[in-house]
Length: 281
Image 1 (cartoon, rainbow, N blue to C red):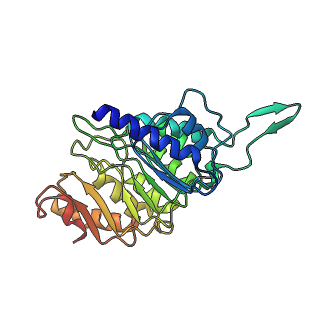
Image 2 (image 1 turned 120 degrees about the horizontal axis):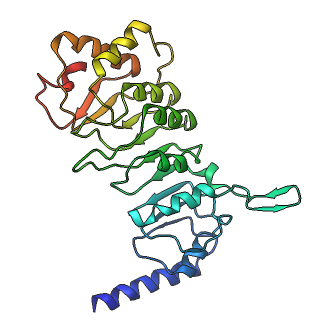
Image 3 (image 1 turned 135 degrees about the vertical axis):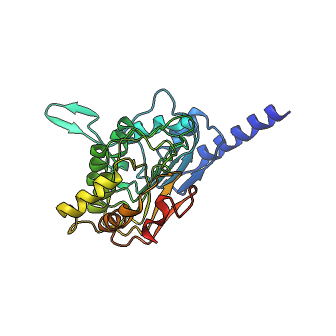
């Protein structure tokens, strides 16, 4: 009975979508749509916000997407939509010396992108994400269970920050307990320099070199005149790094150079008297 009821619900949602025209501006459903409904949906001219949990059909023209402002890819199966959306607006046909492109370009209109929970954050994913140059909110939450799944480097983060300067909220997963990623406080500085409107930040950074890196910032004056983002609370997640007392002041000063408005470190583990949490107290 439940299977029949589920099929009826899916058919009803698909039928509903197929009957909609230019009046539909938002759709959020976990129910898979028929291929016909999907093809109709992605051609609705006024659709602005869309949440989906299903994979795209095998054949879909990349020239038909509406100028979406917000996309939520709710489950891993839906992640291939990201590549399709990133391909939108690129040259699609060639006639003589003329390249034809679509009239509306989701790569320019997209402001908010949310990827599935547990997404592996790596450079291939980043290459699609950076197609959306006007992103304001980016959420691609990693999940580190048996090992760290955050695969970016400081260079990757610098590229992300320079290409997406309008970011106000960047959430790529809380720093994990493994503390083994390849991003350091240099990534934090890149984001602060290139994204002046940034207010919310969750990103992995390795604390193994934090003493050396913050000392270098202070000694060389790197970023003093450029760091300017609005982050006031930095998520340190599951990090349990111990900062020797003699280095706490320098690390705190270094983080204040990177984040001039920093007031709190937010996390879950470690006694305050021995952990990274106390350095901005």
